[in-house]
Image (cartoon, rainbow, N blue to C red; front, side):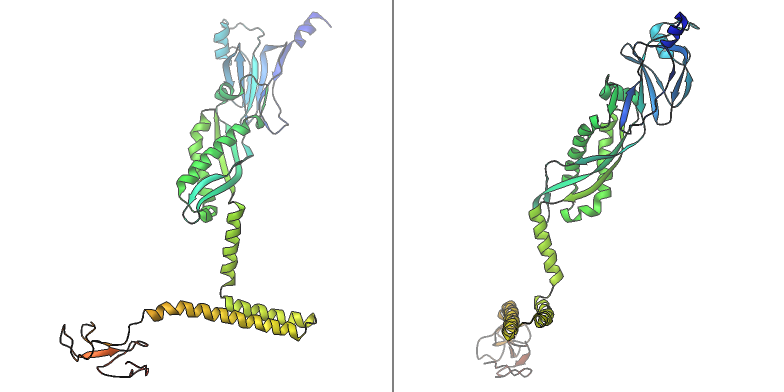
Length: 348
């Protein structure tokens, strides 16, 4: 190999990146021990940005397109190296390709329950998880603030930090929303949009944008789930008496097919009777306060409704005729009546 072939082998004339990993955000072009040839071709594809770094400083940034490297296409680098106009020579620079496509389906979730005050259950603990998506919008800032000199930076390296930021904002948004735990499912989209809007300025500080945030599920602790299940079952059952009758009617044919004897049917009947007695007792206990609130028998004024002394025929307040109110049906009867003219209830 001649000297010119050796020199040509040490010069880079094509700079490009084809990503086949799917999770690489930044990749450094391998130019170690090589110099970039003036007039080399730089190919920046859609969804990419190329950043030239010279002696630790960001020089030039290239958007998608095909470039022929020259002093005209490298204004900052030309200024840093003090090249005279038209002077072309090989140079060394680090070239970073930044992936600017959307990185979706990044996971987030609460490692520990989030405390919130619920209007129905009091203080409850919630767990939540979902997905979010990011995109690099400022390649130079992202290199300065996050990547540094990492030559192969993946989404996994920043995912943990971003997840913590999402969870922190979720806790504050949920606590300030005032939405009941049972109504959170109807507000997933609204809460996701609120979290994304509040976090966008924080993400912009690192040169990235939070393009989407999805709340997939918010769950309560197991003990609260048991209470909710019990409440749901009670709501489904409805009338306990009719439910027991239905269960009995369903069990009789089953017992007959299984060969159940007379004792089984007697026990079943006793259970139905006991259930009916319990239902009747509950109805009676609910009716007692109503009976106690009924007015007592005795004379009262038919005009102003105030009670009058026993034996009085006229009201001492307004002088109107005295009447007797039935304690059972509330019908007004004539003064001195012994039985209600409507239901026959004894008045005296």
